[in-house]
Image 1 (cartoon, rainbow, N blue to C red):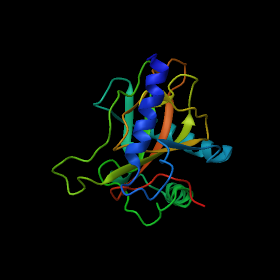
Image 2: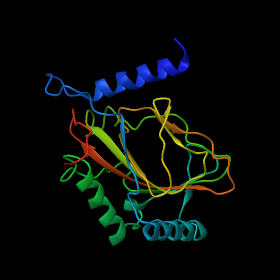
Image 3: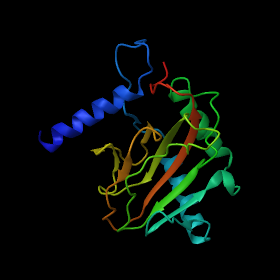
Length: 207
């Protein structure tokens, strides 16, 4: 089959794998959800100022997973403020059954900064087999603060079309994901959020 066809089949298989057993739902859940204009432009600028200040103050550490990547685990370093808490609740209101789920303790909320030339390698965020969370799902939600046409997120080999102010949500424990290389003059800046969800958690928008 041509590559595009194989990618579509892989995405369909991934979506099917996320569906709980028992045939309770006719349609498989999506592999990801995009929320257009999840934050306002003033809110995007507020996040941009925060990330830029953290970078300038040396709070964003080199990411050992790859060159030209910097990040800060905000929950682990006192970096979560009322604004980020409000955005956390906004995600919990937007995604079905997410409210009340515990926040991910492994990675938590993150500020991610990728310089031109950098990228995120393909990986997943499944909990370790010897972890107390083994078998649980790891749901990630990301807000696009600054993005060149390059540097798009990729999930199971498929590009996720997002723009600045958008957010995308997916099961990082189930999905291989990466980014294309950042080619533009500006860094790629994303704020990420995470939750630990039960096995069989079904990704859907709240109604």
